[in-house]
Amino acid sequence: MKLVSQAVPEPIREHWADIGGVRYPPKQAYQLISSLPRSSFTSHTALARLRWIGFTTSIYQARTGEQQTEKDTGPTDPPADYTHLSASFSTLLEFLTTNELTKHLSSAESTFAGSDMTGCADAVEHFRFSEDLLDAALAVRQHVGRLNDVIHATVIARCLPLILEPGETVTVRPSLGAGNDPSRPFDVETDRRIAEFKVSQWKGADTMRKRGVFADLVHLALDPTERRAQMFVVGPLPKKFLVASRSTAEWALGRSSPHTRHRFEEKFGPAGQFTVAEFTAGPAAHIEIIDIATLVPSLGLADELL
Image (cartoon, rainbow, N blue to C red; front, side):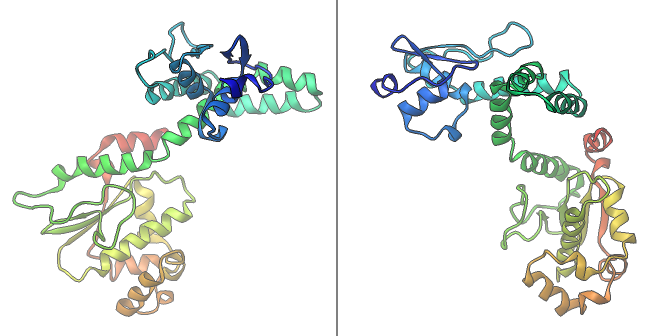
């Protein structure tokens, strides 16, 4: 507390913490108390932790409704980070659903153009580019960075009981997270099949996705066993690329590891001699390309909404 009281309070914008009768911005106060860099926590987190150690603070509330979304947890309980995240989701969702973002940003740009300091400050308030909004967006981005892993894992987990045949067993720990390690070259490996899952929805250009799906097709084609090989994709675009693209296999493997390119040339010859379509119809002709949406309909719905 002494470290805080010796500091000059920075301007209060939206939230505050009362330290010895003086109001400080919560991030300034918590930084001085914890010695943590401000980039490592949000205002919502600072507010909750300052309340937890006994200081009086403002209370964060979502704009929609009167329900308090960030609660005091009491002096014996540490602040629950999921509560702060819930508040952040609420703030961000309210902003995104109230405004059509492209039009909102376009209107803000027009307002900022030609404005002086006072006009810009008024525009910040009018278009609600608040400290709460920034903190909410940063918090959500930090916590949902692995959302693709959750989707990838859930899709594979839900597909397994649908694709396995009677008596078929998973022989290698499936790769539920994105990417494979050398001990698990395929997403799914059973005593009868190998399979790769690409669960992203393509938009039309998708250069990196094209290279990724072709690299996985190559990995399946390189398997020396006679097990059934399957490539699970979302929607028609990945299959259309694989069966019709005139891009060379050399281009498609351009971002793959040297080890993969070496194995390709060792088994199939120079990558420049194949187009993607020729490789799919030739060395990879035995690989089934399956739309996952036939097994997990919600993926097809998500594709329509994007």
